[in-house]
Image 1 (cartoon, rainbow, N blue to C red):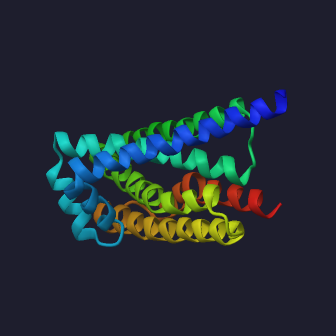
Image 2 (cartoon, rainbow, N blue to C red):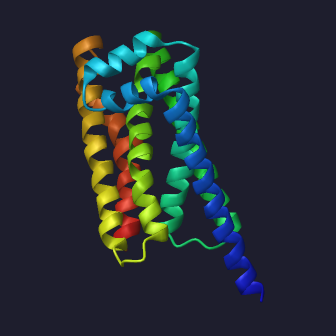
Length: 213
């Protein structure tokens, strides 16, 4: 009975996370569709990203907050699925680790921009690094629904499809950072590469190791 109760509890948590994500998507669709569209298109076109940045108002701040919550919930669902977590504490620890990761990224970017005396670049880097993560969280949501509720056995295909999306967006993010840091601000490619390795590539490599082994 205890085992069945634990399974029921962790399934209810997953349902709660999905319901919350769906509710946030509904808010984006009904209230902030214009800005959400610009955000998604910004991942493939610099023009739309610049347009989103020019808007920079109360509504874009709300979109940023909502999409960050979507990142947190959807990544928690993804990692909990591939790691086969069935305990409440592990699920919440996963969510906490994701928040800690983004907090570290925020502090490090602020520190580096202060060290290089380029305070104005920190806002741009934070926007672009989170923009690609936000787009990933939005795009992966239908895949997560299939992973959890699809009756046809397509788990491996869905996992690798999601992972491929991550790689594509990391590649686009890398190109964006090279263009922004080197071409616009003259930051050495070595420092850009070091940043990408530590905060972008390394988490992906850990994920690959988890999936393969």
